[in-house]
Length: 274
Ligand SMILES: Nc1ncnc2c1ncn2[C@@H]1O[C@H](COP(=O)(O)OP(=O)(O)O)[C@@H](O)[C@H]1O
Ligand SMILES: [Mg+2]
Image 1 (tube, rainbow, N blue to C red):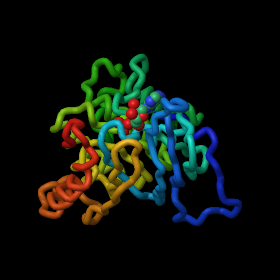
Image 2: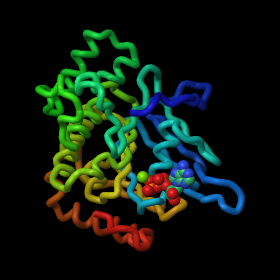
Image 3: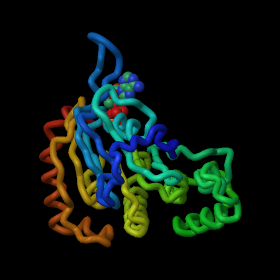
């Protein structure tokens, strides 16, 4: 989980309307290095994510997806343009990475409680909320265990519970299931679908997987090869609340192949997207 955005820019002097974007990027670009050796990693990108929206970004490896998420999390500065996140303290942005980012020296309960401790939620309430989240992710009996005793899927569940426990205004997820095997990945996709449809947390979700993006997303944005720009977007035609059963519909297959056609030209010999 990331830090709260260091400088949440409150762009407009008048109060934003309730459906003003939670995340807004304008001509956002990032390069690494200087002069002739500069590497254009990202952009320019324009993007608006509205409250409650679950936006997924798919793109070839190395196209700048993590760079975009790190800028959104306030971990990296743009080289040009801007990105703003509208949050009302103390509800922060929360980030979930591929490698879990949970603390091995803290118990499962303390890991889930971590963001609440930072927010100075009173201990009793924090414990109760953390226990509640552990039940929701099916890990109630592991409250006192240490992460070393958990499988990869369980560790990632802990990371998800920790991020959602702070009731973030925006959730930033960078290929959170990429390290998991296909079956576990499907299970966690379905769990995340259920959780986020309950909380309606505004989410920016990066993935390699078209299937994952279609199952989870209100909108799937396709990025070009580096420097990554948004070259297309599609709205999966499935009502909410939806379940993983949509995977077996013809609409799902059709959208997957349409997105794959869009991406095919961008992948340029990278490992095939799954
Ligand atoms: N800190 C950095 N310094 C130099 N180059 C970087 C740095 N971070 C990322 N890059 C480069 O920027 C490009 C985009 O990286 P990244 O955002 O991690 O891509 P993705 O997440 O889409 O795979 C890559 O070519 C990568 O090597
Ligand atoms: Mg990445």
